[in-house]
Length: 253
Length: 216
Image (cartoon, rainbow over all chains, first blue to last red):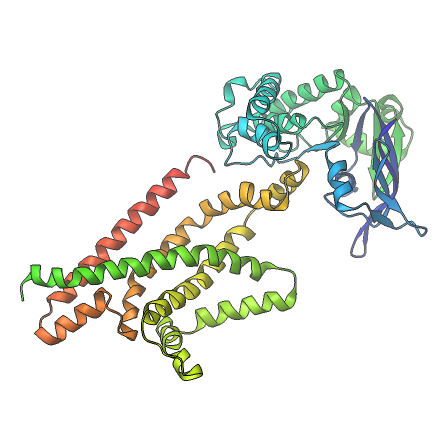
């Protein structure tokens, strides 16, 4: 089954067309990496998929359930709020700048949604929270506050927070862009581990190595369209001139 | 007239001053939050109504508002304004006036919150009211505390405006004693009282700020 299916998404900000007819599917256990230069529309695509941004045209569904469908003219029609609320439970998002709740301890950041959104008991929430923090190598940090942690640690807390709600699809919006190279490594390791557990993931990233080594499928976007897509092998050895230029700039670094 | 005599005559007034202070805070702090919501709604009619309210409350003297509330019912409706009305009018005008100032302070805090906090909460499934009361508001409180302290300190001194409607709070009594006994002493006592009161306010607010210092 397609865990995520996007058909013909269109999105404009004023006169600027940011997404021009983008379609993609992600199957269970697949890891999709979306790469491309700044301003190519990758983040907007991800924000439309996670319902943070309203798309103008096209449709979106999770595990066969339609969050957004198309009318006859291709314009987007959103599902009812109650249905969207259910569909939101199917995915999680890890932000570029973490967006942890600064007034909550590490453990509470992870457990508060479990207790107050999923209405789990405190005991169960703490059990789940501690298990995930252990997995993220943060067991000794549960009583800390986000401001006391390094960027990499904060990002691992935010991954734990997203995983705690048991999403079927996990999105990452440039999860390492706010981190230095050393800290980037620790986040990449976490994502690699999740991939090994067959977590279904969609990752917008500037880490080419990462797209190469962890993703099953890579999409290269530019100016709101998909320029190239396929297995990492295919995309990174593509003859497409733009793709070559883009990769060339990375390789020079 | 000796100092102990002055103090004992002023003590009843001090209790009333403290009464105005706390009642005004109790009513204006929540009311200010509601007004700030009204000020931030999308509906332009409602929004402008609240803007007008804030504008009038901040744009006219509190002493004048006090008199309008106290004498208004008589001049407008020929209502009897005896009994408790004096006190009710004072609390009403103080609360409505301070709510306007607090509303703008709340708004500054709420609008300074990064949009990422709302987005994270939405993704995690928090409802709108949960998002506000669990995630946003606690952080807003921390951000606005210094501005709130300013207002609270002003309020301590503003309580003396109740003399305009001859309410027997401390300053009104001090003025009376000073006039009848031709002594400067009651004003010195009043000054010390306000100063110490505000010292306590400042210490308490600083404690509160320290308490919220555990995160950034």
